[in-house]
Length: 291
Image (cartoon, rainbow, N blue to C red):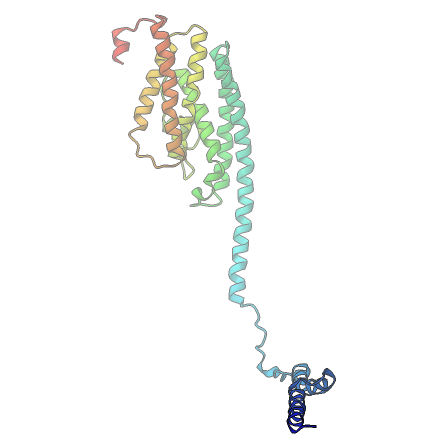
């Protein structure tokens, strides 16, 4: 072999040996090495946690018993709430009877829109007024057990009282053509003395409810041939509406009911206008026109 060829063969052998030394070892040889490297890590994570030091029983706070003062206070509250609930149940029982009697009287007044003699209608309504007066006397006796707490329970009979005032005011107008005053309403209900009285807002709200009856009443009376009724009702409602405008009412339920009164007044005005332009209204005297 020539010297040059021998040198080339030797160089190729050396290159192969170097490449073989740089290639990764087979998996069979690497597995033991990887296992040896991972074993300490696995032992660290998989080893059981050391037991926690038990807390000494002396460090636990002792169980606290309820305070006698606190128990006495809440026992007093419980007694007061039970008494209030019992009293409210008694009040509502009487108020339920007032509502029932008021519905009977209002149903009797509905006959005023029919061709029924006015005396018969008013007689049936007045019969219930005496019943309602007796029920308010019972309610006053119940309230004597809680002096100074009238407005605490006032909401339990507020709406029923407003309906009663409306019925009384409409009955009074049918009889006299005038307004039922606050003192007169209290006297009819037997509430003119003592702490239990007729609340002013209940009285005013009842008058607003009463005005709702007039538009229908006027139409039915004109249909029956009473062409002077619109003038009388219009005069009354105009004065009542003007009187209400003197009050500085808040934006509450009473103010909303008063705002509805102007629509009742407008409907009565329309009926009176129709009767007037048709020449059906009787001629007014100068004295009546001045009033």
